[in-house]
Length: 189
Image 1 (cartoon, rainbow, N blue to C red):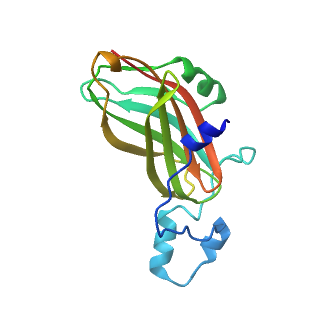
Image 2 (cartoon, rainbow, N blue to C red):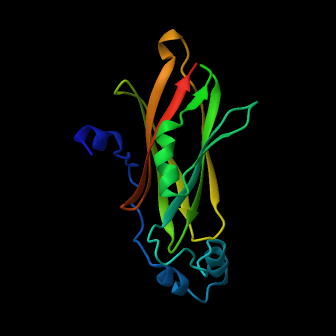
Image 3 (cartoon, rainbow, N blue to C red):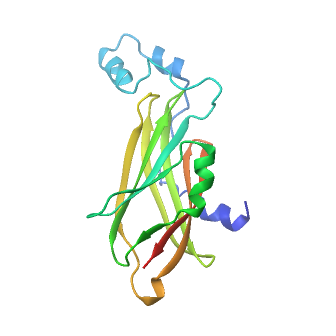
């Protein structure tokens, strides 16, 4: 990745926020084992059931990325397999100029707790960055059932100069691990 791309994907830092110490799933399970309310909280995170295939080391598995526009069916990009991930580069979303839209992601957490999962998206047109989105997704425990997160509603650019093809690169970051997705984001008509 070039230095410019590294700058594009540098997450912002919240002043005064310091992430907690990383703990393993076993450490969370044994933490204050006699505290009933803490045990209920740990159960809600799914800490008593590690999931995921042993040959897949990923903690966060992105299953789908979708575009939600009121009045039409969602446009869904299947990201569940490496082949599907490769195909999304050639499947742009198509939306009308000035329309309100929302991105959403469906993902699964496996093997361990994920703390502070963030979503970063950089949109470029003709190689020039026109938008950068950064949103905190949250912390999740391992679960066989996927989670879904809807992002803030945004408005597509409008006007003759805004019409055209935009490229997007997305990154889902947890701790030092990340999943990088490159896709042909949107064509505005």
